[in-house]
Length: 188
Length: 107
Image (tube, rainbow over all chains, first blue to last red; front, top):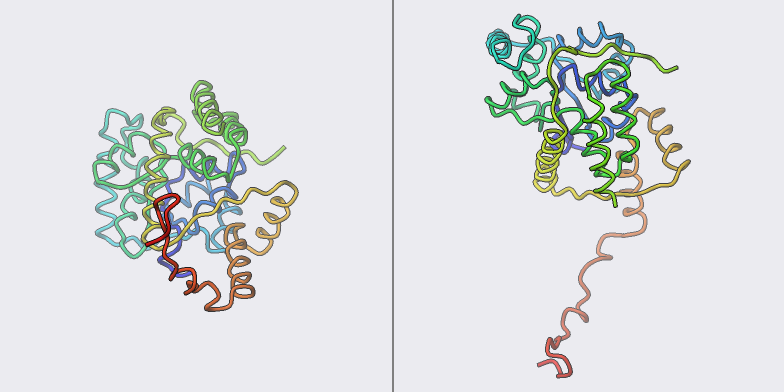
C-alpha cells in the first residue's frame, strides 16, 4: 500500500488514553493505518502508564512520534497554547498545560504527513483548532464511526464508554446512554 | 482485572452526545472523500465468532490489522481466479440491441 493510500491521523493524548482505558487500541488500528503524535503527547502517555503500549505501537509503525518540531512550529504551538488557555471553555489558564494539544494542532500543518484528521477531545482546544480550519474528531466520534462501519457493536461502544468513565474520564451517564440508544436505533 | 489508566485532563470539558454524532458524520464524509479520491471501495464483511477473533489474534501476532490481512487475501484470490482479461466486456452481449418498450422488438 502506498503512502497516499494510508489512513493517516494526528492525535492528542486524550483519545489515545480513552482507547487504552477501554482496551480498544485494536479498533483504532481498524480505522487508521498510522497515527502521528508530537513527543509531548508521548510524554503525557508515559505519565498515564502507557509506556510499553506506546513502545509496541511505535515498533509496529502504527504510532509515529515527532520530536523534531521546527523553531517555527514551536512558536506556532506556543501561540496556540496561549489561545487555548484564554478561551472561556478552558479550565486551566496556564498555556503550558495546553502545549501537547497545541503541538498536535501544529503538526496537522505538515503537508508531508498527509493527515486527514486530528483526534482531539477537549472542547477548548477544539475551538481553537476549529478556528484554524483543522479537521478533527473526538474519541466518541471515532467509536460511533467504527460502529456504523460494523467494526464494533453498539453494545461494545456502550461498554467502551463505561470503561472510560469507570477510570475517570468525564463521559456522563446520560451522554453514554444517548449514544448507545441512538446507535441501537440506527442498527435496526 | 485489566490495566487501569488515569484520565487525561479530567477538568477539561468534553463534547455532548449530539456533538459526538456530528463529529462522526463529518469524519465519515472526510474518509469517503479520501477513498473516492484514491479509488478505494469499502466492503463490510460480517464474521461470526470465533472466526473474527482468530483473525484478530493472527493479525496481532503479525503486527498487522485485520482489514489489511483481508485486503491481501482478496488481492491473492483475484490474482489466482481472475486472470487478466477474464472480466473484459463480452462483445456478443454488448452488441445486442435492447428494447426498452415492453412487448416491442428492439429497433
